[in-house]
Length: 406
Ligand code: ADP
Ligand code: MG
Image (cartoon, helix red, strand yellow):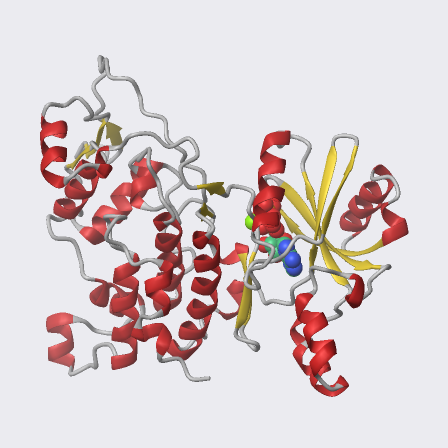
């Protein structure tokens, strides 16, 4: 362990009164914008006393010591916990929101349960059971289609549980889904951006009947800021073409999440976002696995992110997607074509395998039957219209997930 980590752990122990009586810090395992996470040993651990440890109790009741040990292998030491120190800069409301949602989800085995939480002065810590997992970057290049089937079975099981509670996670990405490839099991963490569906929501034209929507958008009552960046041929720089004198109020929508994982409706400032945004993000993880590129999308800026999507989906579909939320999408960037590119071609390109006419010429194989099934599933996660996107529930019944071997 690096010296500065030891120093940081020491500082934390000194600042959080009484913590050393209950926990022994082992290492620092995560550091983000909103929190630092430490691995620690719970010195008072007793499976029978811990309500959260349903799994431990069940196993203790029904299994022999050896099978119990096997079942717990993925948990490493069962008395290990993850202590999430939420930065004092987070608003109290936000911290409460995270703890409350975790509490609501306490019966979902695919969501990392909250054991307890403590406050000392302005400092709040959440204590979670430590889940043995592997860093996504270590294994995403080696994943077979069969591995993917298991990964997404686990992820969509978690999403179904969350969505059944009408909760949007909002930040689905590999670092928030702790997955163990050997055990083909993962848990969802980090409800720091999660919200109940409908919180803060207000009318968006996507909620209208298609015909009414067309009328509403044409009458421009709802049509919003022009999403447009053209390329000035001389400099190749992107210039925003939003009319300066636009009197329409700028729209405010929750756009929390991580770059590259935001659903189109988030980028398009939909004001009535649903749990479908999480399914999109799961699709991005699958795209990463299929193309062996992580991260797949790079843009920090929402407009650039829309251009990235347009490069794949084409202008025509992006225009439709934008209109859905009362937005206008236009671009003159030459690499963005009307029809875009299909995902099969995209995957083949990324894997350096020949596609299309090139394939015929070289006699190369296209995607295997298995790969095609994965791509088909991914396309359903990438439905631009959130209303038509596959739900977590439907995903679990999809052949791609159903056909995983046990
Ligand atoms: P943040 O809001 O800072 O992103 P997270 O809850 O996502 O906080 O935790 C950050 C990191 O800490 C995770 O990506 C993971 O590596 C590690 N971590 C969080 N919870 C656990 C846990 N229960 N078991 C093991 N590691 C965890
Ligand atoms: Mg996180």
